[in-house]
Amino acid sequence: MPKFRGVKRWAMLFSAMLLSSILLAACDQNTPSILNPQGPVASKEAGLFWFVLVVATIVFVAVEGVLIYSIVRFRERPNAPMPRQIHGNNTIEIIWTVAPSLFLFAVLIGTIYTMFNLSNISGQGRTLEVKVVGHQWWWEFDYTNDNIVTADELVVPVNTVIHTTLESNNVIHSFWIPQITGKTDVVPGHNNDKVFLASTIGTYRGICTEFCGLQHAHMSFLLVVKSQDDYMSWLHNQQAVAQAPTDAVAQAGMKIFTGSGACFGCHGIVGVNLQSFSDPHANALIGPNLTHFATRTSIAGLVLSWNPQSCVVGTDSSGKPAIQNPSACGLYQWLHNPQAVKPGNDMNIRPLSDTEIAQLVAYLESLT
Ligand code: CUA
Image (cartoon, rainbow, N blue to C red; front, side):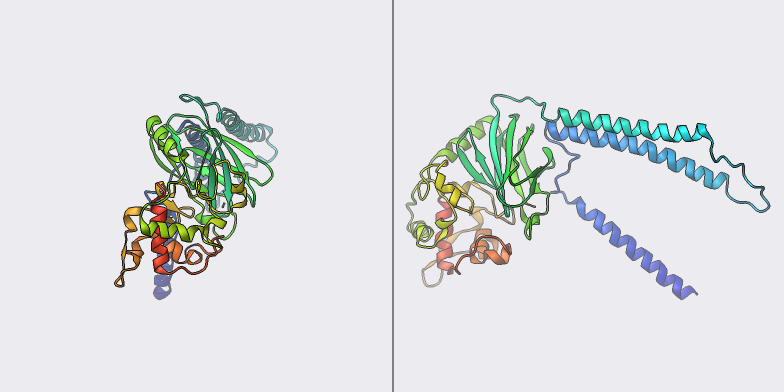
């Protein structure tokens, strides 16, 4: 039946295409790869991956080789006699018990050695201490010895040991920066530690890798690695309190921010509703600290990018403040309807007019 064979061939081709599209979907250039490590911890983990791959390849080639050889060499032929039966052969049974044990033992030794060696790293200068808090669904970075707080962007100096304490006050998350360090669970009531170091200046994507609710997929963050000097100037800027805006539109935005039942019920700004970065009132605020929001590049777990250049505040036809290019402005989309951008998140706000959004954007742009 040639017609049926044609259908079958197309079905097979279609299945192969579907399968390859799933596999190739992972080949995005921005996908962080554990095989492109940029720090000693990830390098050790990648080394373990290659070691296990080599062992597994040897086993695969040997087993499949013997299997294919046997299938061909000892296949059934017409009138062939009954093959020699080897059931109960002690020598063969000992060999196929001992050989896999040796391979598995090699993998075990390699894994244990790597595990106990991971935090054995050294860098320049002091160790940077960071308390990492997993929220639903964003990351808080509390620099305990540098006394600043950021969200979704962990900025660190290059070649410096970073010691993190991983905390959660809600569900289990998992902290992972594929090119820098492997996964560690962030468990409520049980703080884990993690030590890593980035040896190349750049920006690396971090991911939550434990299902933690509706927006688990939108709980990414950035590790921004700066030179020692750039880090120090960034840090000095972050340690400053927020400056009151001088521009009238931004001043109107600040008024909305601090109005009754408004933004500052959830968000903290040092110099506005927080005395300092260690102000205990911050514990009552469920949203990210926005003190130097304008220095960040993303919003809400990297759902949207944030760049003041794409959010130009001008005026509309009636002379009121308005965002010139709302479709290119991630912050406009976020303030316009945060539940449409990231359904289920904690930002439940009253609808804001376009004028109010423009004023708020102007204020947030002033938080440099
Ligand atoms: Cu947090 Cu998944």
